[in-house]
Image (cartoon, rainbow, N blue to C red; front, top):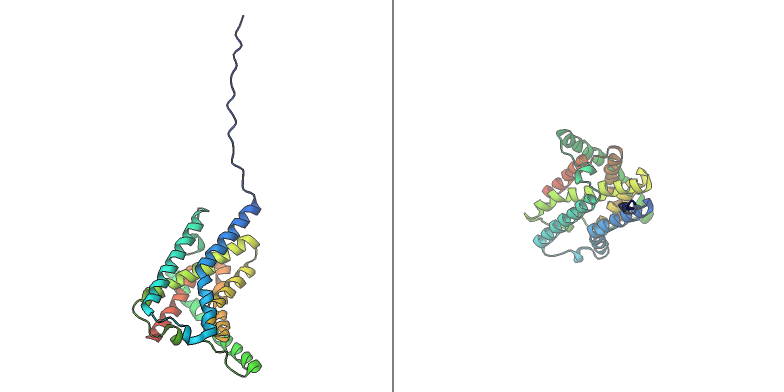
Length: 244
């Protein structure tokens, strides 16, 4: 009489449920909103505050201001790095790859964006004057930044990376992936950058938007962040020299 031998079958491996596309989209929208809110929420509110109250609202401590700004922007770039790493991406995947060609193209982008800014400024200024017969107010760069201390140098070198990687490369990449539209991505990037430059006044902030739009269009067409970082760096360094 033979024994009945029962062989227990191994249980089938339990697979983790695959996250559906809609859930992943919601997560990416949330991460995008979180990065932008932490990075730019304070700058937007300060811009509105300065637009409303003018010179009296400017901070008195210059060194403290530069150090705080460097710390805040560094922290936000680290946050961006973490959010990208969650999807196994790096900052380089946003188009930040160094080359001599990128440096040269950055100078060309700076020149092209300035050519867009000049007629844009006169167009906005003329239109505003026809409507209101006055200037739009706002603060000048010398009023906002006064006479910069030596601590303005690290901020000047860091700020183009902060703005162009977060407000341009990351924002545009995410909006394109989530909506399929580079046009919407470029528009959102330009409008957001305009919003936290309102301390210059509506007129000057709108004029600067012509520069921002050139940067956005270039990134939409090439997905290269290095040239726009270089172009932004050119304007920030020249601005710092002019203030000194």
